[in-house]
Length: 294
Image (cartoon, rainbow, N blue to C red; front, side):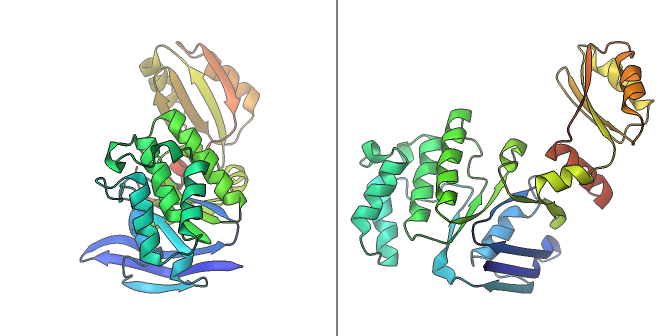
């Protein structure tokens, strides 16, 4: 069942185009990632889908009622001078929720926040704040959960714990649309939309996107990265990404064996192997095809 549909949805702020011609359908049970750099239009998209920002064009259809959607913004939005419990009681009171006590207690126990119910929300760690924000969003038992970069600025351990919780929520049948700057998190999604400068560049499941990416991808290791980069440029790669001693390079389709031998022979190359295309490779290709830039 389709829960929400956007057709050519757009949002302009004067001459600035935040989102242009977005087409999106979210169905029951989906886990969908909206991926893109800062300024891509992700937050504006979430605000329109949540009913907080009026579109300037297109059509948005909700098939679940506004009360069936919960939105967790990128910035912690609960009252820092209220305790964990007070924040949840306040949120529940706004909606007149029945069985608030049992819902509140169950949610706090599920995210290991029960021992901190009397702590001021402003005194929580980043990971604990995100858990509390998730609890507040789940109080209304939504069918669709919108999460705008929920783990940005959170330490790696807390990120892992948050995603364990989110998978448990999704397993209960809640559809989830999330954005993230982390490509490893994006790979949790059943389907991803790669977005830049207000437009969706490409959409699909990860296997299909990887399979449709042309060329061969190699991973190189070198302590002389700059020298290797210059040598690689002469081989006309399609994409080249370097960080520390690691380089990822994509070439046009050709026989992989001879190409790997040429790469291994480059001065300064210590290791080289062919690897599967990553979502980052797909995104860089989509940017080049769409004329955008990261």
